[in-house]
Amino acid sequence: MAHDHVMPADLTRNQELVLGTLNHAPAPLSAYDILDLLRSEGLRAPLQVYRALDKLVERGLAHRLESLNAFVACADAHCHRKGLIAFAICEGCGKVDEFADAVTEERLSAWAGATGFKVERTTMEIRGKCAVCLKAAA
Amino acid sequence: MAHDHVMPADLTRNQELVLGTLNHAPAPLSAYDILDLLRSEGLRAPLQVYRALDKLVERGLAHRLESLNAFVACADAHCHRKGLIAFAICEGCGKVDEFADAVTEERLSAWAGATGFKVERTTMEIRGKCAVCLKAAA
DNA sequence: AATCAATACGTTATAGCATAACACTGCTGC
DNA sequence: GCAGCAGTGTTATGCTATAACGTATTGATT
Ligand SMILES: [Zn+2]
Ligand SMILES: [Zn+2]
Ligand SMILES: [Zn+2]
Ligand SMILES: [Zn+2]
Image (tube, rainbow over all chains, first blue to last red; front, side, top):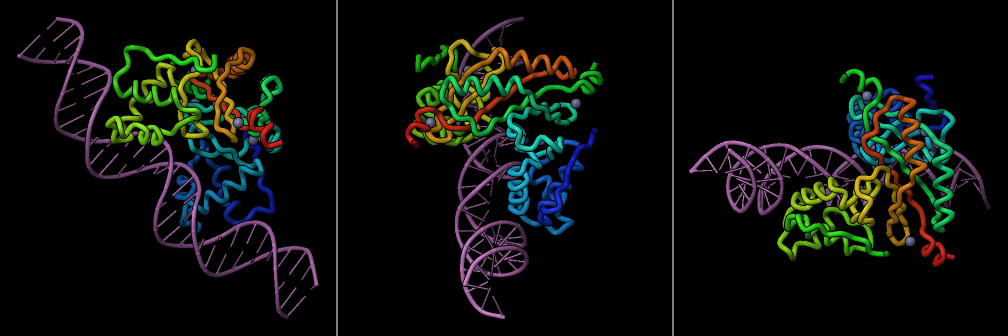
């Protein structure tokens, strides 16, 4: 289950190119990284990439990592839009682990209920070192 | 307890100016916002602001909001560096509510223990509407 | 078929966020 | 004094993101 990606049939050409690039990347890519990888396919301007990314993120097929200004393909064919997602980002190898935690989400909605805040979107990003990189450094 | 800020005595002039600006702001400010507010005090270049911000964030006197590329003064004189902090950002009025949750932190460290990931820093940012703005919109 | 609305596309220009590199200042400790 | 260090000021540059324009394609409506 290491590569649990999905590629819907109704994507436009640009969206498909961008998602394909993210699917094959071992680490998050910035919009400009993606652009450079797709120049050979005819893409020329940042906006072409940003527009595709907007749609992909909207559909939950890709995620934006705010702390990196970069994007990843969704790692879980079923996770899309299901609420709070957390990302563990390794500063060593760049790999990103995407996971959800129901308790944390529950906690958050309890806080929201208590304060009257209406949650629309949550980003949770954990920076650190993955087990592989820790072992390599030891 | 609405304005629980702190202003250490050992700050440099630039650091003090920047922290003072953040303390008085009703909402997060970008580095360039801060620069514009401090031109009258003699600041001229972005780097002067970024350098001050780096130190303030390092000391926990200010926080960076990754999803906004902006900064706020720490709202709690005692919170500094105490682990996971969450920010609830209102899209209506821009106000930011800073809070900590021990259960979530506990949850996170359980996950880290299970996967062998070493957490160094966590950002948790919640976007939505605060109670005041919700009421105003109704 | 002609019309219309909605969505995507391509391009140029511009705005907004952040750091590199270098020279200099003022302190602290020896 | 002088070395070391943190802070400063300045210029130049790089990275990230969007505005504004016009065109093309699709798909429904008449
Ligand atoms: Zn996902
Ligand atoms: Zn790693
Ligand atoms: Zn704080
Ligand atoms: Zn509000």
